[in-house]
Image 1 (cartoon, rainbow, N blue to C red):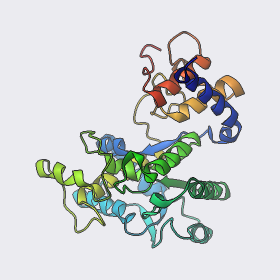
Image 2 (image 1 turned 60 degrees about the horizontal axis):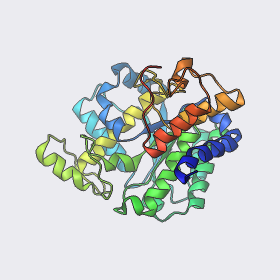
Image 3 (image 1 turned 180 degrees about the vertical axis):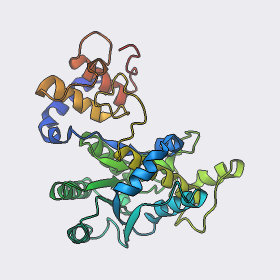
Image 4 (image 1 turned 135 degrees about the vertical axis):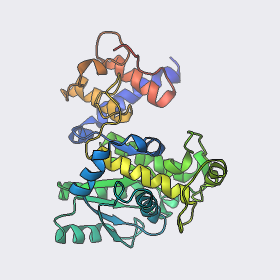
Length: 324
């Protein structure tokens, strides 16, 4: 039997072995704010902007690169001061390259109204090891356990021009995979920088957003006073993705459930694989509706659907069938 044919089975077994550790997070669907979030910004129902302002108080730790989000939010607010007015955001002048756990605890212990926390990287992901990223992920998860009433938002590191063979790409994928498997909410800083609005991919770009200059030369783009290290349009896209992310956190579902979307979060990704494995092997939650777990439309939900999903997500296999 070839290696290619064995790979999906091996992945299923690995998922099954790791399932007990992932099971506690299955009740929460993963949310990833990537370049599609910026594209879908105009689909956000107006009611969610008011809901976010009313219900959420933020603590955001960042330095210059992280300020791009705030700049983008300000650009949107300038466009429509009523609709895009910011909620309460307390900014802290540091980033994930320093001790961020202590100031987070200190703030939350003295600000009971705060219910969302986000920290950004500067350039540290580029030089980090797998172990160092795991320290970040475990520390954030530990805060979630310690403060169950607070939503913690994860983040990838900004582009550095290293492309798909660089350490940054590997470490960002580590963050993405972990967040998807554990039902976390991720602001995918790097992915937003990697795609123009027409979905053209620029894998070798840097934080300067070289494609932004080309795009804005032939498309209308708003201006700003300054977008740290980058083009104003890069900040603008991040502001859009931030609102999309918070609308999702507030309960907005971008798309109706479809075949393969086992956890009904509007996305088809690794979290659906984990969800299906839990249902099949561990008595986990039932896909809702049930038929959306029948990915290959063979009238049953079993290991073949898991293999089908893994092939689709990781090996460019056939998409989930349309007739379930």
